Image 1 (tube, rainbow, N blue to C red):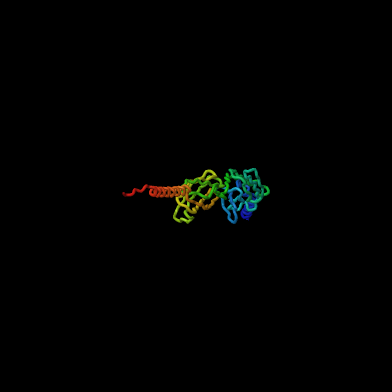
Image 2 (cartoon, one colour):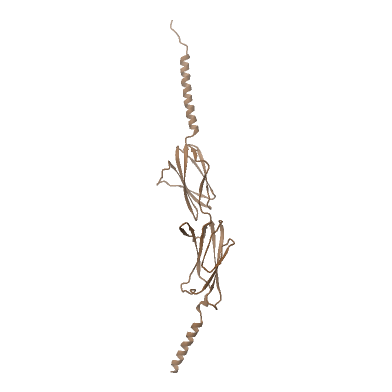
Length: 263
């Protein structure tokens, strides 16, 4: 009997110790990661490379890694430092904001956790470097839309996105789509695209331009009217005039030549 009582006492002691020891007090850090989302219209994009578009609604979420549910009853606090002078505090693992200007920022999140009433406050800090870029929203032709055949033409376009940008362009005669043809790829390091081209035939030509940077893409088409060169018309007129002058001169010479009568 004594042995049985001793075993029962030992079991009660072990259970009591197990109840007083909280495994959460041994936690030292909070595992998780930051995830960025941006909403444009009805579309939501995951920005997992640290590149965001300016003036676009942004949502950053802290995803907690807690496979054993150690923090299922814990209370969290979040302090978001966006790196632009704005600090947002709350109890939800998500923050909604937007960057109004392009540039480089460091977003920093401080997470605080109250695991139990008597356990010390756990804190951890997460940070991520963010590059904010201007999305490509417009391609504008600077200059006239009328050109001449056989004339070296310079076309200038303003692109309002953040460089560097990849530009793919091609000319289409009579605006007929060419499914087999390729395009000319150019890297643009500024906001002005300059193209030099010589039109070989008159009519309506289309210029297809596709521009993209790391966070956006835009495709546009321009109709260009190409007319025959005035120099060509002048050359034709002068040639005709020269022929007429030569013809009239020949007739005048024939008409005015003295005639010799036989005696």
